[in-house]
Image (tube, rainbow, N blue to C red):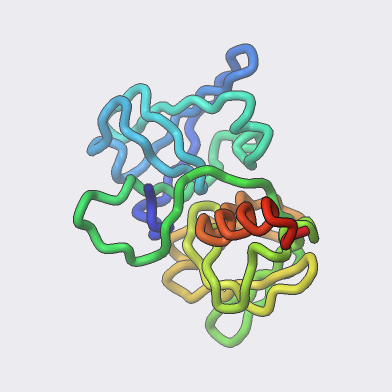
Length: 199
């Protein structure tokens, strides 16, 4: 389990295709502290560390992960948001994040608003019931607060610290972003669907 509080920005150093899998070499400030078999969130996708070096680590993405996330677009130089799992007894500073990306959403607009930034994203209207104003959402592994969700567009506000310490500073209109909807909302929607109360 993760919290959506980014620990480090990693940089993709190498990408190697292996049949339907892709192996990534990531350089970061926390790589040397990782252990083989450890679960680490990469842009919100939980990946298993398979090799560790002095300032790098290797992970592998399978076909299902590549299909649901933006990992397939990674290339050398891509910046990646990294977070290790929440330690038992640790503080939940963001919200409950599983590291299971639901789908991709498209960046619709980026506005500088006097020291902060407003990002708007388009998503499938069938998912509208999973977003509530001032609720939580995870984008590229970052825990954020939903602003004014509509039928197929919602916004988030990015403060200068988040801008500087995540890959939001690299996002432009048209980019695809990993989204994980709030797990509590997904369970409620599932139960309501079972009883015919959710579209």
